[in-house]
Image 1 (cartoon, rainbow, N blue to C red):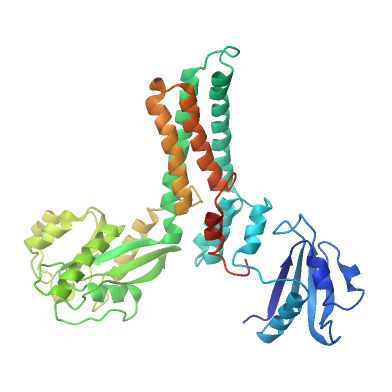
Image 2 (tube, helix red, strand yellow):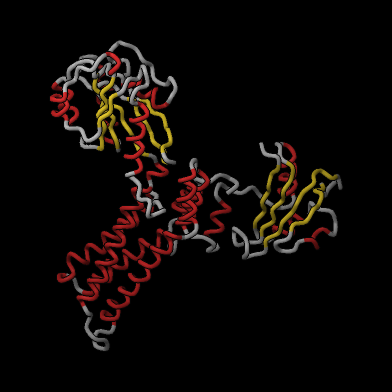
Length: 438
């Protein structure tokens, strides 16, 4: 509950509706971009119910592109609601989720890339997420994609000219044409690759803790979280299903999974847990593979380690009980990253976190401060595929088919921006993710 509340009214009748709940003569105070003080009155009774600071934005110089009046009143629950009720009686209605942003988009104040960036900004939980969202909101990615779209449009014009006016224009310079398409394809591939990697800044990097039963996975899980989240006992197979929690490393969300011990078991419930553990490992970006340092490595552990085709760290745990693993045994695993830990004493936990943080940061492309949503990635992939089709089969295609594929690519880019025909259900799906106030 804040100290103040802001009520925003948008639409062609915004000024007239707000004037109905102000004292007479206050309508002359509406000067674009200028604050003014007023009391809020009940027009039916004349009773003063609130004190407010009011700011008027004249179309198109507002967030939505429409006339907007912002009313700042005292915070709390009841007072803002009273003002809101008066506005509704005066002719306003409650906004739908994301409707202010939707109006801004429909009035060409922002494209769908910037809409997604605003949603990312609202949901941000770290300074890094804010930085990437602001960069996209300012239109950095929009500029790069617009350059590609403009160049693609020029390529389409070159082809269409030969299709429609074959006898009136010189033949297509195929070498130059294909070279330009190859450049555009390379640019799209770069944007797609870097944008998908940077999406982890918002979606999170998944880290699975794996190993056979009773090697200390749950203890390590608790040590990383710095609180008792998982149940720890000396009984093998305590963890029957995975649990996860989120931490932040260098501003990047990291989802840590504690999984069931990897072993063959006749016990049906534990067997399901083992299967789910393997699914989590397969779906993770990084695996922390634990072995018990107080005993020799088993052949099954070597097989499990070698089967993990992920970024991984070998964690030799329980070193407080004495280290029995030999260098020869470790050579069988050939780990790129290895840390000796004791969850009981805390030895090695800080070092493990440093290595993990470095690995997490390597998933991000810091030189490209933008990320792609799943929708944006899908459309970008579609555009690239259409260009690939032309590059692979140009000599077999008539020019009208070349134009068809390039226009499909161009339309996919337009949909990323929100230009052209986009089904209402897709727009509603995008804007419904916002809260009422946006």
